[in-house]
Image (cartoon, rainbow, N blue to C red; front, side, top):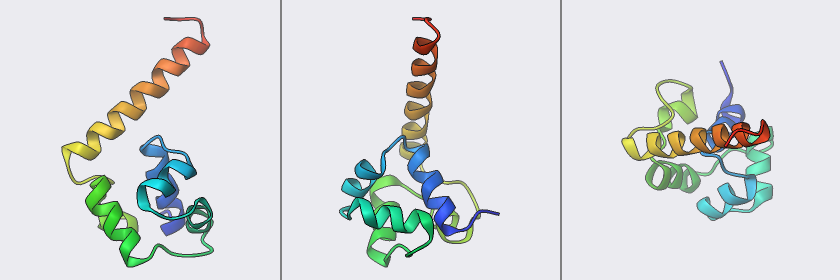
Length: 97
């Protein structure tokens, strides 16, 4: 099972965000995100609250590794959009439009 730092990185990647974008969304620095992803620090309660309210993240997943990453269709929509973007980039890299 992944630890907290790995789950935060998985979340960010599922959303298709860079560390800079993720940091801006959560009103923290890029270094704070880097520290969370490497296990040097843990997210504060206010950052966890923002993940939950702004990104529809299931805090049970982030904290304990149980359940789905997202709690609503909004989160699932963000994931679908991210996956579609990655798929389109893959097709373009292979010369398929």
